Amino acid sequence: MRMSAEERRESVIRAAMTEFARGGYHGTSTETIARRVGVSQPYLFRLFPGKQAIFIEACRRCTEEVWQVFDRASEGLTGEDARRAMGMAYVELIQDRDRILMQMQMQVAVANAEAGGDREVGEAVRAAWFELWERVRIRLGGEHETATEFFGYGMLINSLVAMGFPEEHPVWAGFEDEKTQQL
Image (cartoon, rainbow, N blue to C red; front, side):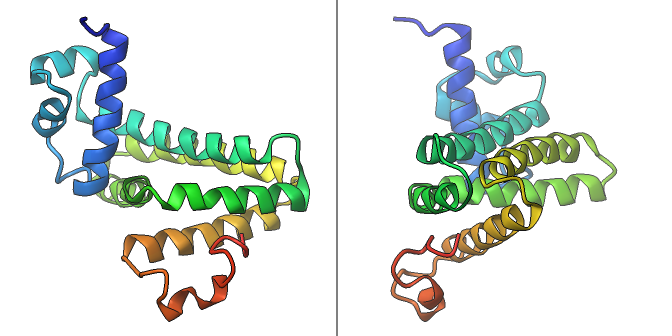
C-alpha cells in the first residue's frame, strides 16, 4: 500500500528529528534524511522547500511532543500538582536520547544560523519554544518564576543525559528518589 504525501511528510519529519538530533543541522544532509525515509531527494523537496524548512518543522514537532507529554500527565491539574505530574512525566522524555539531543541541536542551530545572519531559524525555534514555555507557565499557575525554575531543572537534566552521565553517577545526587522530583 502506497503512502500518501501527508504520510511521507510525517515520515520525513520523524526521520529528520532523528538525523538532526544525531548530526546537527550542518552535519545532516537531506540525502541522509531521504535515505532514512526511503525516498529520493527530489521527492523530499516536493514535500518541503528545503533543508531549513525540514529542520524548522522537526523543531516544532519536538517541542509539541514535549508539551503533549506534559499535557497528558497534568491534565486537569494546576500549580504544584501539575508541576509534580509534569516532573514525573519528564522521565518519559529523558528515556528518548534523540529527543533530548534534538532539543540541544535546536539551540546550537539557532546560534549558528544567527551568527551567519539567518534569523528565520531562530525566529521559528523561539516561537515554538515560547509556546511550550507559555503552556507550561499557565499550567503551573501562571508565575514566571515557577516556569523558569521548572525549565531550569529540565535543561540541567537534558545536559546530564546528553553528556551520558549514568544514573548512578554522583552528579545525580540532587535528584535521588526521582530525577524529576526537583522539577
